[in-house]
Length: 272
Image (cartoon, rainbow, N blue to C red; front, side):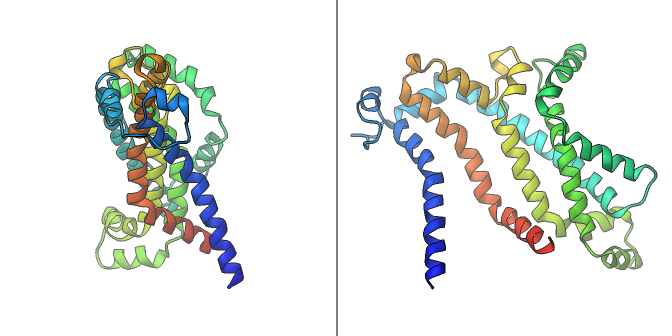
């Protein structure tokens, strides 16, 4: 009983420590600049919701949101689709060069992302893809493939081969066995991969900034950085409101998919 109480207390403290910065940002987003500089730890005398309107309209957050949603959703669907299909091939099929490709995917994981920025930039420039959606989406899809393929490979490989054999005995072809029998059983891993891809693309700054010189193509991360650099123009309240607007979608997606994420971690712990 004592151990359980102590564990509950420790987990609660960690949760409060993690949530407090978000609470602090929300608190500052509802203040005037006078209140912010007067006492950053006090509650606002009245909630200044106008800060959110200012961030959304004057700082062009509507444009940034639209760009980010488009790029993130296409990168999410495209990246996860490639990882799922390739993971199934590696986990359940036999073909020439399989081992070599597996080693290649594993080695790519050890290449630091900044090393690839310059080559990818020149490739996009030569193809005329700078300041375009495909120029952003393509590298984002490729960035999740090495790790995603390995995750899906392990997930499919962990499923009993008897399932595939039984499905084929019942007349299912390779494709139908994949998406009707095995894919539903790997949904926790797919959800985990989706969360990682969504958060990674939504909050990514460097490539979105380098590949675009037009403000009309900025994503939410770049737009937020631009707004923060003009905090004395917009005011601190709207800047913090922009931070809340930037974070709220990621939080909502994680809450929606967290049960699958936790399930995938639990299954990995049990199998390990």
